[in-house]
Length: 590
Image 1 (spheres, rainbow, N blue to C red):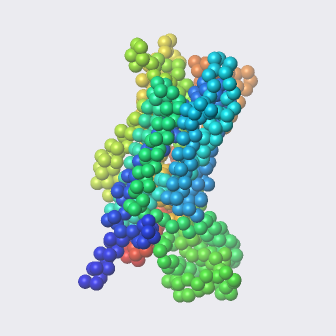
Image 2 (cartoon, one colour; image 1 turned 90 degrees about the vertical axis):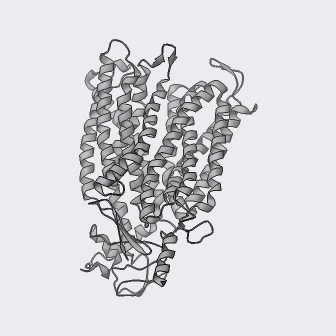
Image 3 (tube, rainbow, N blue to C red; image 1 turned 45 degrees about the horizontal axis):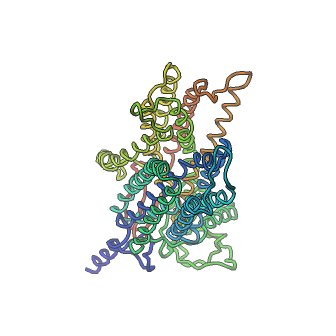
């Protein structure tokens, strides 16, 4: 009876080391899960609505209100987006090291709210409102309005960058990885997170344009401020239901200690039995099982006979030396060593994801350029803007992600026996393969467009946009789940920052690639593939080049995926092992 009662208590309590808002061990029935994550997804929906409402119209605002030329406006848009893709690494590091994800979300949402209110004030307050202009002649100075506008804009850019990794990792933290039922729900969480983000994006791109065109920029910015205030308030209301991870200092220091300790003991032989390595039980923290890869780093966990130095720590272990005073730069735990191996092993996967980011980056440039020279009439009197064509892809993602989670995953689960339907890397691989098809479709449609004597309908872009949506559902969500699940336990927010850096680096690489292709194709007096007149350009050749590069990258990814080993984790009371062969979690007694 006592044993049964103890197991029952264990089942009621969360076992992943998180705490509730009062610092106690959370109870499954009253914290976490969908009851908590819905508040978090609502905030993501509102934030994406605000962000894309601004970024999709920023270029026009800079040109029409601030009267900037095309190059200056494009530069400012790129800088705004660039800041929001670099800051996640900093925000994720600070959340994991010092503040915790929830506090960082509250801080970033507060900055976001101030930025939106300043944007609205810059248009609504008479003192800050831009002067009326006729052509290049304005009735007053734009100086004060421009200053307030850019202060607000970069507050939003920084806040968005800090917000993204912290909020998503906080949402995933609401599901206990050591519990089979909650682990399955976490897989669905990433799908519905993506659904919420896409829904917010779709509404931001479409509804915000309508509001600004009919009611003005000031009302549009005010509406965004109200939307964020509502979802931010809903996040705060959910405070008693959340599970919180306690920050444990810099997550990079223990990894640096592993390299230093391994180098210090590089001449020592490795023990034949891995159980001889230093593997202590640290209260409240899960341990990572030993693996045979990168064995040189195992030397950091060898217990040698060196006298302990000042600053040593006493810990209790499960190896032959039950109590050992260790210096952290001389002796590392097996968990430290394995987490360092894990971080090193995800770098190749990160590099293979860059090609996907390069392909997606073309949607914001060449796809819109294609649409601008096509027939965009829905009816003889109604013509949609070129930028609105991308809503076809966003709407497809909103529809398909729900179908994937509710229909495809259960069917695959029955067939494969995998609780995710397919493994994380298989999901990413399907997306990378899909990118080849949407690039090929883009090249074929562009060839048809150029060969047609009359402008063809924008509906010809539907195949490539729908295929791109399928690609994103698999790759985008798969990368989120991968970088959250495969980084060390104390690096979840930073892991999401690493994932988001894929798109920042890819944008830079895309620009470099276009410059290189432009230089090579224009040598010797030849015409570049990229011309101001799209009909004289050869971007269909460029898309075939991207498709060929994607094929090579897909083969590279398959080689990496076949050799990759998922992270094995020992829980506080159980052990969960993610096995590459079946992609599932196996539970065994510790």
